[in-house]
Length: 306
Length: 306
Image (tube, rainbow over the protein chains, first blue to last red):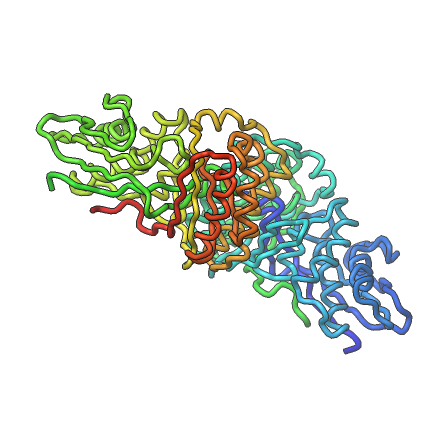
């Protein structure tokens, strides 16, 4: 195979109680990447459409991730990456993760699949480190593995795929302000109360259990975050109103997507996810703040070859 | 029914990563309780054998729990509780939980089962509050529901029963020093590092997943506790040596049982649990510290009618 075209999806990390560990993969929104072999070794960025991204291979998340892979698995050929960037950087739905994971996935295919999807996470981490200052696998995991994922340990990259209850749909609204992950990390406190930590890990355990048992009520009760959300939500206009509107409309739960500013909700059924989206956007319509809104099933496959 | 005899089992709470939320039920060790109706309303403690316990109904965990039940569901009859107390108070395997849960379970049976096992937790909490100063459901849940349990929320008593992988056995060693829950709570810090909290809730999520998928390797990797164990283990003689010996012998994981001083291990297969116990006791034999040791399957039923 000399070239490949793939769809690298957006994703939601930091699902309420699961800061830095729980994420899920979105479906309709994602980048289109075209990767082809070149005669010159190394990696280069070709054309970038949709968004402005660095062309310098040392500064682009996709090429940095591929370089990490090529250090472990050198190739006599080189690779050119063309990106139709449809996920907005800084929107909180894993823009850099899609680029990094998509690029290593594509190159791995062109090399004859020396690595499993799980093993590719380690290389994509180099891209995430460039983007956010600290490498976290909580967006990469759902993009590469699909569905819901848990990062048990970010150091050893011990990552699990969790089951997806049928009939679960996501609503994601992106108010168009830009929030860099590095800034939303800075607002967090280094220490948290033990009581809140206990509440959080009780909820993480219940959330995971609810995915296995398809218990939507339990899923709903467990989607609480008293640790991160109270701090980060201050950076997101009308966060509390939007979240409460989602819940009042029938969403199972709602919270900050990744490090924001996007806000996600999970609902039972597509019709409910649309209704929830209509309720969420009211507040941004009122204040005249531009936004994007996405309704998505849970993408069980992650990255797809086109 | 005028009288009932029950077995109220011991239990292990605070399973490594799951401080205050995860517990499981033991099998061979537990109290025998005999509860009979009396003509005089109210509750009285009859004979107590095995251990010294208060006879005053206001000071005995079992009668205090029953009084809480009788406030919600008054009866014209009264109840007399005779206890053969086989679990040592202060040993860290849910002595007060067995008394409290056993008593409300027995009285509920004699009243014609107005409450589910799940609903009985709220009344047994009154007994736990008397015993430890703060009421926690993490021992009551496994005693009443059996198997592995998760307390999602201690305030609303949102409690789940989790699946038990087959072939899992517990080893529990009780070095005979007495540790009151109230004292091992005092050693804890009110604030913990966010990084450690994230590691802990990643492990709780993975532990719950491992129970559903019967993934013993993952169960083993998730049995980590960097938050509570480093503090509380200082109160337990030779803790680190005993734990390391358990792991070196093949245990999947090991940690403090409840608030200690008992130390538990989980192993695959009964033969391994026995081998692990032999390794654990070596250190107490060396220093001449008396101990009890128990090998137990996971008690899926919890309290049993005899």
